[in-house]
Image 1: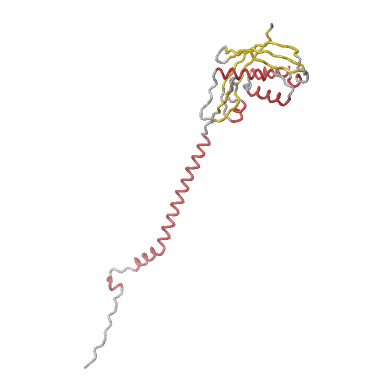
Image 2 (image 1 turned 120 degrees about the vertical axis):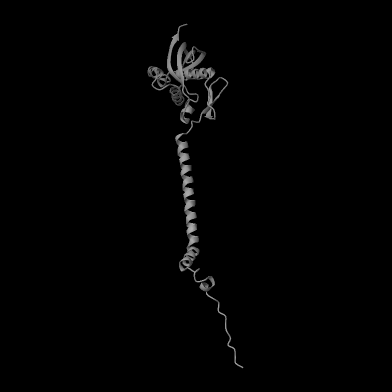
Length: 236
């Protein structure tokens, strides 16, 4: 009996399974290239997109900060007034402080007292003079008038032999911007003895310009400035 040879069944190749017409070596290479490098390309594209978005966000934020710095708003200051109507403290606030008639009169009252007073304390006298000038409008008639007064009646020279105290008797507004003030000056020697008592009357014109920076607001929180000043002794 003749032996029957054993035949092994061989697995057909991909070309035979799919048919010779379905296999394309270029497509197969492209598929292999996409699988190997396509994921890296996708990640790189996503990274570039994210970097672009972050750059745009930073650009918008910087532009907003520049716009805010250019269009910065002025922070107003609030003045705290004591029982006599005098400003004793100031600070920032959300609303501006309006200087009514009572505040105008109080500021002018204090300004006249500081202007005409003479004290032996040199430091206090210097601070008083600085406060007087902080309430005078620049390049105004009041600036020249007060400067001429200080040159003719130098406080530091007078303090070597006498002191002067001022007591305001009345503050009467004659118009919206003009105020009339009457006061009494008492001059004493360095031992406290009264040398003279004089009555004075002055007419002052003011203007209001709210402060725009912190330094000005601390010196003149209400923004009340003397534009013109004139006074004379009242004969009794």
